[in-house]
Image (cartoon, rainbow, N blue to C red; front, top):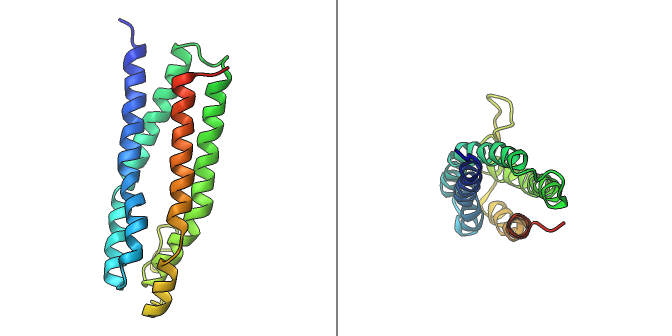
Length: 163
């Protein structure tokens, strides 16, 4: 039996699962602008966090299946696979650098700890005007451009396999 098509399918399904789950966070990022109460922001941030387990599990499937497909298809001699890996790392780094600090600030602004905060950390919520200024950020557009542009480039590399 030829397992290669099944491994590629797992890779594609991993990518689909990641985009599906991470899309929740993307839509929350844009929806936050309309939220003006701490309760709304807390609910939206909770929704975003709830999708992360599926996103990271799907990313793991995507990576493992992609690496396996690289070996099975003997693709490691092509430039496109190395560029894809470097691009994935660059996208992840850029998304982390652009998004993490901002969303930690949003959580703190509504009195909520961020996942990386020490257990029991307390934060004083900011007033409605300060919260509105923070939520009016154009950060979602920047993140969408990085993620959407990067995803488009990754798909092009895998479909066209240049070099």
